[in-house]
Image 1 (spheres, rainbow, N blue to C red):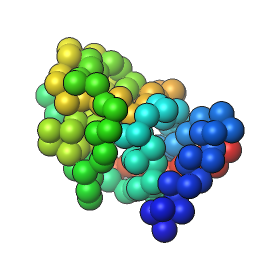
Image 2: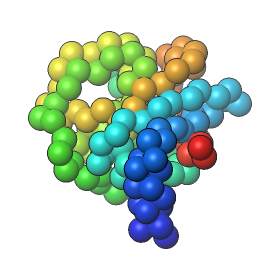
Image 3: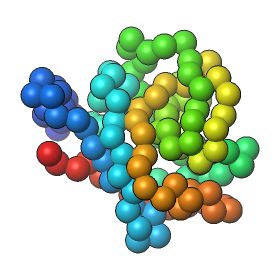
Length: 135
């Protein structure tokens, strides 16, 4: 099944279709567009995902994934910005930023949220369902 998802991702990318995902938090939906990079494509093949996002440093919500994502062609790091969906390769976790953060080695951009990001800035854990949005 994983290889079937990879084939669909590659075909969509070849047609110029953006990878879009939906994040459902407390019954409310946020949309996101994933980046066109190998790490984001690998993440997309894992969907749907139900995760418990934990607050980290009052800046981001994080959750550990069931497996490591590829780091092929990834930059050495990047700065997290409000609305960024990222992968922290050093720990193997998803990180979604609700506040700006400086440069971090091993941080790879997966995509960008649109909508009311304040859903993520609530205190404590947040349950999220991340699903692919078919073109």
